[in-house]
Structures are given as structure tokens and as C-alpha cells.
Length: 78
Ligand SMILES: [Zn+2]
Image 1: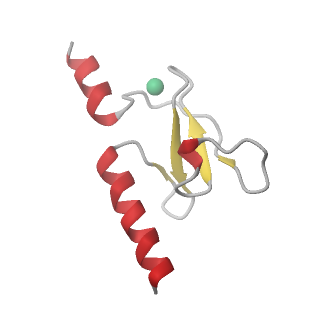
Image 2 (image 1 turned 45 degrees about the vertical axis):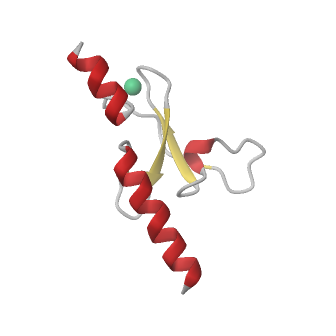
């Protein structure tokens, strides 16, 4: 129950991820990779998440994704 709720809010509560995959030049462009150009897949549930090479971390929460989108928009504007 708690885990399900956590899943709903944060997308995934697991901690084992595949090696980051860069999608530039790739035919397959998953939604998860659109944000940073790199994504990882959860080895437990198979969900895909954006991965930030600079920060060396997986972006799992919706809030983080929104912050990322805002940051990218700012970069493009400037
Ligand atoms: Zn998972």
C-alpha cells in the first residue's frame, strides 16, 4: 500500500538501474531520454527514467523533471 503510493508519486522506488543509455543518433527515442538525452531502465520494474550525466543521478520524481524542463527552457532562451 505504502509502496504503491510511493510508486505513484515518485514513479519508482527501486534502486537498481541499467547502465545509462545515450539516445542521440538512436532510432529509438524513449520519452524518458528526451529530457537529458540519456536514460536508464529500472532493473526491477522496467520503467525508464532520465539520467543526468553531469550530476550522476537518476531523475525519478516528477518535480525534478519539471525543474529540468524549466532549466532547459531557460538555456534555450538565453
Ligand atoms: Zn523500479
